[in-house]
Length: 302
Image (cartoon, rainbow, N blue to C red; front, side, top):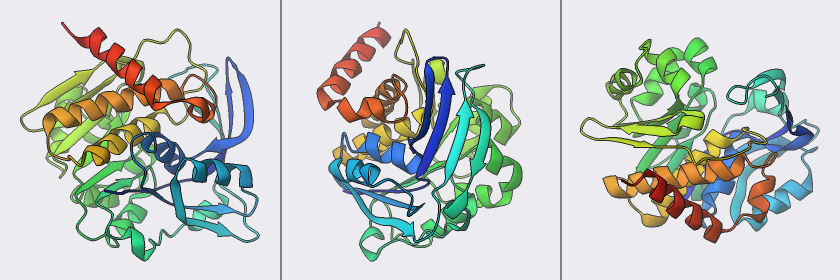
């Protein structure tokens, strides 16, 4: 039961109160893939980089068991770079620069072996590209989509068309309110369900996440942390943990399994913010994830 992710692979420059890193490994597809790889061993990544993309990053992803057949490398091109600061607010990055480089011409083409992947994640890319991906997959079992405020602003028609074809939408609280023009998150979630998805998962940062369907509501708190080094990629790590667990269980409709997947996504995201880039995931073990899952379960139980 493979998992396909289509999104960005990037080199990030990030500054927080804990310090600064330059040209660190980043990108939505990268964070998702690494998180999912803790649960599932068939992660197929589709993205694009330049020939300046360090081989050490390729080696790291390969050692995680991530299939990079769909990672295109453009000769003479430069990798997508993003720079942001969390010095003022850990909940929202202040973008310093965005150099799309080869990502500006990204046209996702799925290898033949990827087209029948049952679990599909459309990472935070232009919804027009998300639609192109959906045209290339055959009868997926579960399609999950992410988006952001930019696409809500400039590509709403394409985004709304995408939402008609996905099973689950994952977005943060601000994006949910922006998309629906509702101030109440429950109202926003109910409104999104009318757009096409059968479930919406709304991330609330340090306040956890909620999940809504027509008949179910679930809420999970964030794991309590005393310090946060770098929030970059936390949302994509959440999605990776969520989908990786679902694919490993081969369950896409069972409510109990989906709730467990949401908690696992929350747990992986909590590890992600403990260091810059993907540094924490380089040493993270499945046992640590399971231990924190059980502690979070105990925290939420009454």
